[in-house]
Amino acid sequence: MPVTHTQVGCPYCGASCDDLEVVVSDDGTKILEVRNACSIGNEIFHHATKPGRVKLPRLRQEDGSYKDISYDEAVDYAAKVLLDAKKPLIYGFGSTNCEAMAAIGRVAEKGGAVLDNCASICHGPSFLAIFDNGYPSCTLGEVKNRADVILFWGCNPMHAHPRHASRYSVFPRGFFTGKGHKGRTVICIDPRETDTAKISDQHLMVKQGHDYDLFNAFRTALRGHPLPEEVAGVPRDQILEAVEAMKKARFITIFYGMGLCHSDGRNHNVDIAISLTRDLNAVTKATIMAMRGHYNIAGPGQVWSWSYGFPYCIDLSKGTQCHMNPGDTSSIDLAMRNDCDAFFNIGTDAGAHFPIPAVKQLRKHPWITIDPNICMASEISDLHIPVAVVGVEEGGVVYRMDNVPIQFKKVIEPPEGVISDEELFNRIYVRMCELTETEPVWIHHPALDVAKAGTEE
Image 1 (cartoon, rainbow, N blue to C red):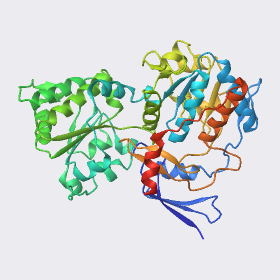
Image 2: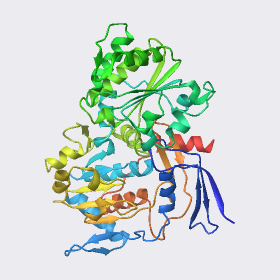
Image 3: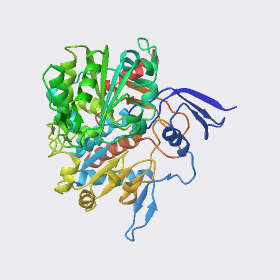
Image 4: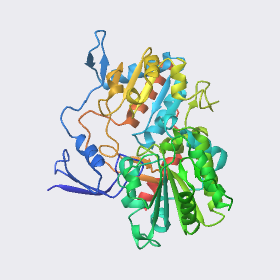
């Protein structure tokens, strides 16, 4: 008889939906059906059991071909690369669990590495703004149950977070939002007419790169001061209509995405968005939330902040006297200056997402990719180590985009012999200790206990 797993987490986007039902064959080797997931989440589960999966580490030979090696050989190779390098760079972690993020910290400390995650090229500007101006946020559950005005600024959740609108922000009926979509006002601010804009009540087509000007106009109108006929390509009447809707709201949530972080202004755009949220709280209740991309990209910020006091761009090359300096210790900057002499690509695809000049610099040195799948990064690597798929073949703690921890489940066994990220990093750490003739030091991370305690209850 097939077995149905309920309350399964989805390893796709930052919404980290945990209401999936996965039907598995009675021998536990094949996924028969996935319910409640979006089309991309559904594909992730089915892809794990498709033929052609890499099941052994692959080491590049002199002629450019790959040769299968054992995990022990791969662990030895990775440990020696880390110890031989003066300043290795360990980057990624968009698609793994918090247990692995804690384990890699020991490896980074031992190897004197720079520890960075996808926020470095994603929501890094959000971190800088939050450091300066705070983060008046909430949970997605509060949005569902309370928010009657939703503002999407520089994001398109209908594509990037397919179930966000139906589960949390636009359509669901909550405790105080019983009318669902009919009781909400949805405002979209985007230079393009996206699918999110099409389901919105108001679409303000801001001139690209002029978000800061429009934020200023919102704050000006909110305080009752006059506006020019047009600001950032948006007519005055549209701005006043949107501001009036927000003033009448009981609860507002501003969701913002890469449109703010990767356009002119960057962290200053997010800074003034937070300031607008604070201004709105003088009139009503308002919150703000970053639309985080990967299902656990919020995880490194939690685990590493507890460990080191910094969420990303952490330079551990001087031992425990670590520091963070985006623009100096961030991955792209290190690569462009050729300041790192080994590169570990973990649970992401730097080959696809990094600028070509940065990839060319990193390819001058040993490049190791740790990922369940073949990707552009794995195909240019000196060593590709396959691991279990978190959320499918391995459970663990995941932090949703609102920083709520969720315990993901394991629904099937990984291919025979394939190990998890956490086990791999622990084995690399032990091997590094053996090579340096030192005793391993195991430190427990309380950040991992929060979700597990909730699961046990």
